[in-house]
Length: 387
Ligand code: NZQ
Ligand code: ZN
Image (tube, rainbow, N blue to C red; front, side):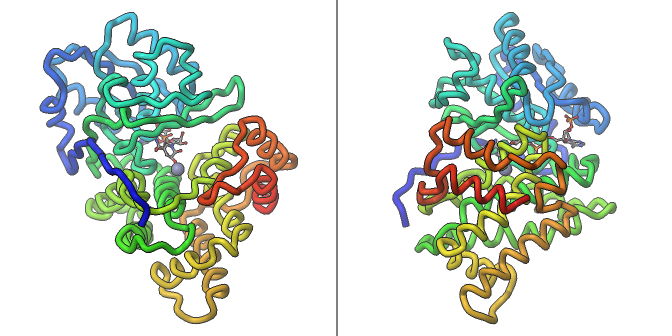
């Protein structure tokens, strides 16, 4: 097992009705900016719950953060924060709103051009960001309990990430009731995103970190078991709760400790969202199978372990089990009505592989993956295989 440090300071308030308790977490004299997305919180009752919980506070609002949070919109929020001396941020939404708030937390105390924080990128250390909490309305990203974020800039077709230990939420509310109003395609996205987060930290080479590997496998199995329940039209509180907690546990830092991690699927996937606006989770379903086929020799030991322990496939050689693992993964995405080829999402896919190769080369991303040896030329081939 590799050496590691582990600190996750985010307090979780899990369960029905927990939104009512947020006033226990926010200083009474805080000047709060509540930030939300396109309006789902107004139709599902979450907005009213937050307003009620914070009725004794100095509370301002900024709505309209779009999916794949847009830099230009966030700059408007940043100006509002500075003009109104806001000193506490509250994200009420999915990963996009929470990521937007993390960027604002970092940018509020940053002296240079805000885009530098993503372009360079600039990490935010403890004590540097503006304090913030979150109320999660869409289980998927794990952003509610990690310190990373991803921001899009349509003007330049870029989607870049940044983060740092100063950007953990102080608290996050996980009320499974919010899942009632989520459209099925977004629930499917959440399952696929969390599932792929586990794979990025697991599908590398067999390791001696037995506990991390088994926790990772448990999250995968639990997501598989809850998928059909949360995709069904009948709301099941316990299934919703398991799904929500799986998504958080998939990317709160725990399973990546002591092991090597990949993240090439996300790096390539973010390009597909930047070029074509494809939902984040669906880009992962497009890239992951090709990535695992292209890097088959390096990953076959872990693919076979995944086949055995997660899917119960015990027959065949390591190679045969590893091949079946990739087929099982594709079938799982398809069971969520998520397609796994780029051509399923855009007719204009010709040239995408060249574009990704060029973008990675220009950014000097010359060695991705768990061994830092996946070149822009390799990314070209993986994207080409996903057409
Ligand atoms: O904007 P509103 O009206 O709220 O609607 C949203 C949005 O249209 C809707 N929604 C959210 N909660 C709902 C709901 N609709 C009904 N009922 C509810 N309870 O869902 C739509 C999608 O929301 P969004 O926040 O964009 O989805 P998600 O949570 O999947 O976040 C995706 C973003 O997170 C980034 C992605 O790249 C993408 O930009 N990621 C962040 C990560 C992190 N910070 O750790 C890791 C991930 O790998 C990912 O890259
Ligand atoms: Zn993701």
